[in-house]
Amino acid sequence: MYKQNRACYVIGVSKNFWKKLKDKSDSLQRPIIVLAPMADVTDSAFRRIIAKYSKMGTDESVLDCMWTEFVSADGLCHDEARKKLLIDLSYTEAERPIVAQIFTSKPENMREAASLCAKLGFNGVDINMGCPDWSIEKQGCGASLIKNPELAKKLIVAAKDGVRQAGSDIPISVKTRIGYSKNELSTWLPALLSENPAVVTIHARTRKELSLVPARWEHIKEAVSIRDGLGSETLIFGNGDILTTQDAFAKAKETGADGVMIGKGIFGTPDLFLSNPDIKYKDESEKEKIVRRLSIMVEHTKLFEELLGEYKSFAIMKKHYKAYVNGFNGAKELRVELMEAKDSKEIERSVDNFVSNLQV
Image (tube, rainbow, N blue to C red; front, side, top):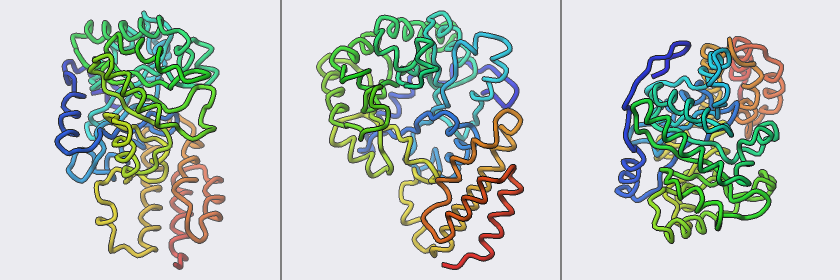
């Protein structure tokens, strides 16, 4: 495992752990549930908070796997950049199973970065082929790979070669979209499946649509049909606009997807993946619910400062405050105050003052 600021290489952490998760989900009659990789959101601090409050790894949780934020494979191949980027690949045992997501358009760099991820002890490596950010696309990465399926296939092969060179056999997966400017699943998905990735996660929109239209889950059903028609053993996960685990279960049942990746729903709700949150918190008063949420927010802030304060801007936390602080009287005024805070001490002071005057 990679500890903060120190790499400790671990080989042979898992074989295809996805098969074990699939067997487990089948026995429980529910889909595999995973946390989406989101830049400047699902960093090591937030993942630890999620693991703790969603009781990851216990019978109380439906969360089966986490992803890191996406990391540049090109950067991982250069000594100076690697030192900074390894912070984004830090994790704890509480976050397992965990998949490292990387991106590049260069097979040789994919090979080297995948090998590094295997040595760092990750349970799997995921290739980003769906990010619509122009700075990523102009490198020939992310969603631009939808227009270059031959290169996409080479990247999958390179990643597999890389983990083998590290003496490992951890699985390779892909996260992508239904197409670039239009639905291209009929050609794009078979190209990916031809290289037998363990999982293909499909965001149910095109690159052109970004997140400006509702996710179209009928295309996840189409993807499952294509996979089945080809006789592939690759798992198909759906992604897009899932806010609750109940919605995830319903979407999987409607589409036949093996798993569901949740991103948007996790904002401000690190206990999202509890099996029975209504039962766990059924005796809480409205005030107690607000205080609990704000207490978790303060804990999250302190952890961010402890783990990442030296490397990342404190402003990253402010998108979390918008999610934690809403839906109750005085939330707007507290949010305004938090947006001006410069460190965890100021955040804690503001929350303490708010709670001491809280009336529900």
